[in-house]
Image (cartoon, rainbow, N blue to C red; front, side, top):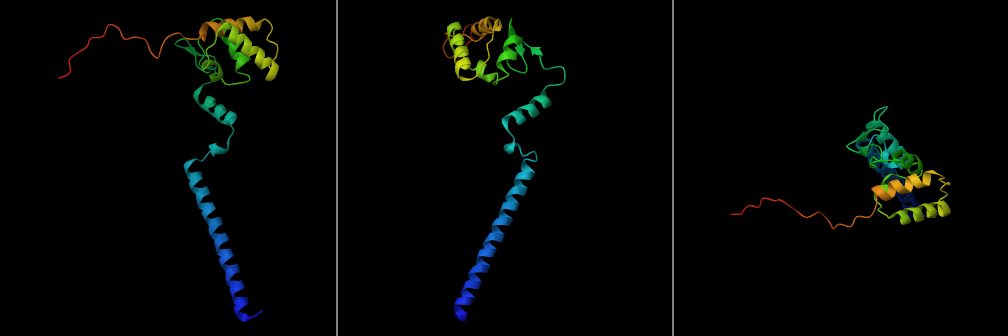
Length: 160
């Protein structure tokens, strides 16, 4: 191999090494900036870990089942007969939001429970099923109103 080719090969090796060092430094800087912005590295935590941290920070000891203005604070469920049965059976597998975002008739709630039992390994609810279905059908039934209630008893004024 000639001296010129040997020099070119050495120059290429130095160039590759400089690129590698630059990439490592860049990754280190990005990691340092991320650590400054989010010291808990919450992007790498699972949803369950984040929920646990949020719940521990927002709900004081003894307030797990506190009800304020007719709403169960931890879950957002409406206070009514069967509330704790629903909390104990439904939120052990999924978020309370899965319940509160749905509105179904009694028949649809039963069908959903059957579907969960057949496909999602939901256990036999036994006597609790009737309590749960009655609670859900009463508090999370379909609404038959439009986007909002009509405005009534409004004092209108003239725009100038």
